[in-house]
Image: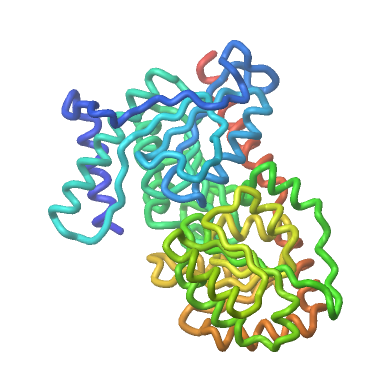
Length: 419
C-alpha cells in the first residue's frame, strides 16, 4: 500500500510538470452521445447550467451505477460528461452523456520495475489529459466510480480544486479506492459497513447511499416474486456478470443433469455464456432434455431477473444491487482469487440477511449444486422467504441519495464561484 502510494505520488508529480507529457495519438476522443440535457443553456431545474463529470470504466460494475446517476442528474437539469478509459462503453448501454472523453489509464500490478514504469507513465498521461479536459469543460463536481480508470480524472480534479466524490460499490474499499479516498471530498458507500473505511480517519467523509441501479432495474422491481407450485415451471437464471464466467458453463449443465427427472422436466434455464462456450452449453442442455436459452448478453436482464425463481451468479456489486432491489433469491459463487476478496464480502453480507446462499467456488461442485437445488426446489417456501429477505436489503432510492450528495457539493462549488 505504501509502495503504491509512492508510485501514484510520482504520477501526480509527473502530470503536474509543465509540458512534460504531450497528448496525441488518438488517446483523447470526444464522442457525442445521447444527452438528457442538450446543452448548458437548456439545463433546467436544479442544475442551473452546471456540468458534472462522471469517471468510470473497466467493467459493467463501474459503468452501470454511473449510468444510473447520469439518468438521475439529467432529470435534475445537469449537463453530464463521461470520462472513461480507452475501452470505452463495451456493454451497449448507450451512456446518457453529452460527451464521452477517453483518457489513458492502467492498473498497478506486481512490482516489476519495467511494468511499474509503464503504468506510472500511462497514468501520468491520463492525469495530464484529464486536466486539459477539465480546463475546457469546467465541471462543478467530478464523481469517480472506483478502480484505476477513476484515478486520472479524480486526481486531475483535486489538482484543479474541483469538488470530488468517490463511490465504492463493494463491501470492501478497493486498493485504488483506498488511495483515492484520501484525496476526495466525499466517499459514498453501497453497504452500511465497508471494510477499510470504518474506524479510520476516512469514515468522516463517508455517506451510505447504496449502489445506484438503472431505470430499467427500478421498473423490474415492481414485478412480484412469481409463485411456484409443485408442478409449475421453474425459471432458473445463471449469469457471471458483465464479463461472463466459464466456471458456470462447465459446472451448471453437469449439475442440472444430475437433478431428479421430474425436476429437470420443470426447469427453464436462461444462462449467460462466453462466445467460445455457447455451443457446448447449448448441446449439453439439449442432450439432458432441459429447456434452455443460452446467450452471450441479455439486454433485458432486469426483466429476466424479475421472472426468475432463483438466480445463480457471481457476487459483483451491480449484481448484488439488482438482485436486492428486484428481490430475488440467489446462490452466489464469488469470483475466487480477487485481491481484496470483494465478491466474497458482498456475498457474505447478503447471505447473512437470508437473501442468498454463498458458496466458494472450490466447494461449489456439480454434485453440490445438484443436492442444493434439489432441496430448495422441493421446498419452495424457502425461496419465497429468501426473496423477501433479499428485497429487504435493497436500496431502490440509492441513485437519489447519491445525486443529493453530488448536488450538495455542486452547491458548494457554485457558492464559492459567486463569492
